[in-house]
Image (cartoon, rainbow, N blue to C red; front, side, top):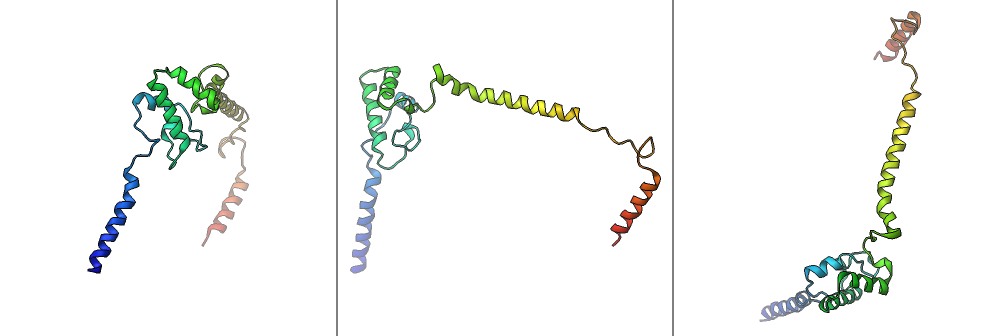
Length: 165
């Protein structure tokens, strides 16, 4: 009888342990496609450096409150621009997941391309300079000024002495 009780107790403990996994947290309500799209443009302000809709901290109250604000704004009929302005006023420009494509932030979009072209130009310039300063190739031994036959024979003899095993 004690074996049956211990199995029942273990089963009950397993069921109680699984209940929190089955209950949906308050902040993790179902988001519409539009809410996911708009929420993907913002960062979670809890300090995790993740996009708002993808913040995976257990019990992150910041993402839950931000998603709640987002859903309430969408339910009240606010436009995407109005929601964006609301989040920027509340959290500052650091709430953006990517910088806006206007004004001074346009530099952040343009600089990678500029760096690519400048880097390619520097590489091409270095290669062209190296090609200008390449020393002349040594003429073959039999056709023109080069190594004398005496030096060549001495080098061959030394190589044969050093490579004999």
